[in-house]
Length: 437
Image (tube, rainbow, N blue to C red):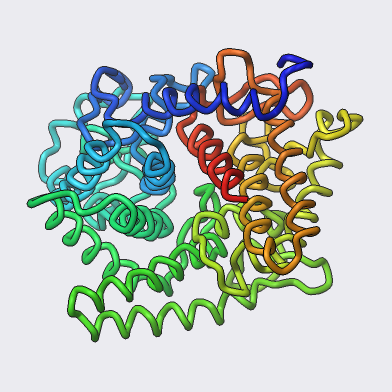
C-alpha cells in the first residue's frame, strides 16, 4: 500500500482489478478441476459461478470449486453493477444453468452404482449415502458442481438462503437490465416462478446457516426470504397470479414479525439465530446479520440499513473484533477494525474476512444514503466510518489487487481460499454504495 496514495485513487485502481478477478469465477470453462479421490474431473459449463477459480484440494487451501447458490447470487448481483459488454450474456447463461439443475435426480446416482467404484477407499467416508441421495431436493442443496452435476460429498443440508438470494438477484436484473429477448425472458419468468414457490413452501423450516455449521432458524435466511417474497409478490401479481402474490405477501409479513424476535435489548444487537431451546449461543453476535441487511436491501424502518438497531449491532461487532484480533490493536488513525464472522471462529485462521469488512463499509454507505435528507451530520459520519473500513481493506490488499477469503487475525497474511469471488463482489457492491452516499 502506498502511503501517499489517496483512498479515492486506490479505489479507482482496485475496482477494475476486482472486476477482472471476479469474472474469473463466472463461466470458468477454461479451468479443469480434478478430484481423483472422488473419481471426478469437473469442467465448468457456461452460467456456473465457482466460489474460487483456484482448483485447490485442502493442500492447504480449501476446495471451493463449487457453484454455491448463495455465493453465485451475490456475485451475479455485483456483476449487475458493472459496465462490461459480457454482463448480460453471463446473466442469461446463469439463468439457463440454474434452470438446468431441475433435471438433477439423486435417485439416478442411487441406481447407477458405477460411480462409487471410482471413489478412493479413504474418500468413501466423505461420500453421501444412498438414502441422502434418494431424498435430494435440488433447491435445498447448498451447492452443486459447476459442471451441473450433484455434489456427492457429505455436507450440511438443507440450506435455504441461496434460492431466496437468487430471486432477489434475478429481479434486480429484470428491473435494471431487462428485457433479455425471446426465450431468455421466458426462462427468467420460469426460474422466478419456481424459486418463489420454493421459498413460499419451505421458509418455516429450520436449515443450516450461512456458514453451513448449525441447523436452526437464522436471521440471514429469514431476512433474505422475507425480501424475496416481498419482491416476488409484486412480480407474481404483475404476471397475473394474484393468489400466489397474496400468499407471498402474507408470508413476508409473518416473517417480519418473526425477525423482530431476534432483537436482544440488553446486549443491544440482533441475534443471528434462534435454536429450538431458545438459549444464547456463542455465535449469536455474527456478521451474518449485517450481510443479511445489505443483501436484502430495502428502505423499511426495521431490518434495513435505515434501522438504528442494525447500526448498534455493527457497533457490537466492532467491539468484539477489536478485542479478538491483534491486527486491530494500535492501528493507525483513520482505519476501522477488520471484521470476521463471530467470536471463537476456528476456520482456517479464524481471522478477518474481506466480505465481512466490505459488508460493514457497505452498510455504512447505505445508511448514510438513508439518513442524508433527515440527518446530514449522521450521514457524513457514516460515510467516514465506511471509508475507515475500506482503509483497512486497502492496508491488507497487495498491489496486484488479490483478495482471498481471509486475512490472518495476527499477521494480516492471506489465508483460506484464494481469489474468493465473494470478496471481489463485496468490494464492488461497497464501492457502488459509496458512490450513491
